[in-house]
Image 1 (cartoon, protein in one colour):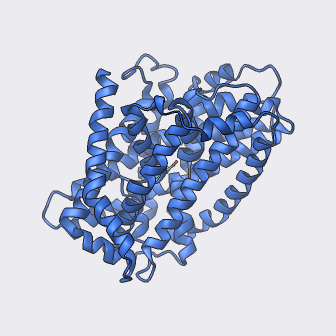
Image 2: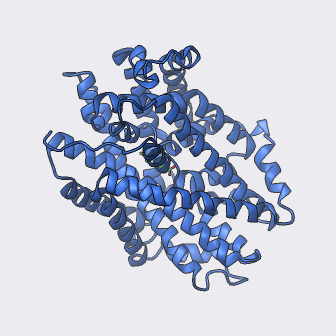
Length: 448
Ligand code: PFF
């Protein structure tokens, strides 16, 4: 442990970094399209309940484990349960970080490419945007180049360090993201006919609920809050001892959930107002929205702002994914931060290439009808993250002990309501809910 461990300089530094990790493609790209295909408001409702019952207590737990041990996920479990196999939960997290960042960066590359194209003639009326999108992703070199560029920036930030890299970047980018967002929402809600989109988004239709709806809601809550893979253990490990974890975590969950909900308000009213279909799937942001921007007054400006926002949000999340992997080799294997960032960033770049090729040369490689990128996303979100969360909750509730989580999270303050909430959630709700939903959702995916 020769490397001096850095700490966030201020409370706001931690909150912005953790919110930056949470707010990403998951909020702006994934949440709207999953809401669109899972039936709208009813999915939003289940997702919100999941965030309260499972997301917030688990986020507190992860940050507490990190702050207590001041270690990466593998080291943290080793420190709390020496000579047991629990460190494997941390290792699963590091592995998941590798997988997620590899394809996350490919999608972020699309967003960067669309930002650049927005400055040119992307929004010509009458364009077939399905063609444009498929044409873009089924090339080989261009998407690889954008993926490379995105990884290069991510590696640059991580190599610069926790304070000079991560904290400095999020302090500039997060306020910018909030401002871009407000501009987009005002535009979307003021289009004539926006009301139909608001209704789709806010009026639940309970006939749409299946096991898949619950699995998708849990998967979305985990992915968007960066839970189940030790990102918040890692960020928590740079948190000062006098910080109140419960309060800071509340900010992170609130900001992330707020931005996801607002993303729906930025997107659905515009989609409905201009007569498009909300269930366009993963292509919603890249195929439906450009068509919306092409029809909308000042569409080029708003299109540019939207894709810029998406790229910025992706960057502040990608740095947390890489930080998990980098912190592991720094702490456990004594690597320097720079070497770790470059070597592991390089490996993740290579691992992302199959996701790119899955839309061209390797397009006949599929799993349950999914291309390579969607397969990685499916394994990460439907199996690895919930499993990581399940095991973290069992560890916290039954091995490390609820009491310890509460002491660490609450800084010795007596908060009876919160403590009861953690206790019930960590020991009972999280393990049971995740286990049931995983089995149910997996059964439907394979046999339903
Ligand atoms: N929370 C990010 C998003 O919503 O886009 C994705 C993510 C980042 C997941 C970091 C997991 C993680 F550790």
